[in-house]
Length: 182
Image (cartoon, rainbow, N blue to C red):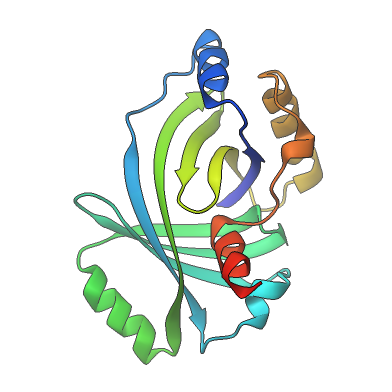
């Protein structure tokens, strides 16, 4: 499936939660997520400028389980082919990735709350070192027009009183990597 999302910085989370509730969006309890992102052989260029075809591998540690995720970039960092599966033993998967030449490069720790807003998934994220964000995303067919999907997502976000000028076009992993490289 193709995942297309918009990520905005949130200035007032309390007000946003009220507006989401008014639209019938029920937000979950917080979910602690600890993501470890791998790159091929320590390729630091992948963190400077992303391009179509780039692949990101991630092990996401949750309270009682783990997930493995592969994203292959399409038109931007927020537009990816995505494959995800539950992992029985994340330590074994970590070792497999090391043998294949991948190294853990960035860790992202966040508290996430999720909900549904119509046909879209909402994520309210409080990310260590970065701040508070909303992500609005949808899963689509691979051959969609990403600009049209992005515009639909922006219209929904703007109906919540948010501004497209608060968009963050980089993933949390890229933001954290660049934070420590400057």
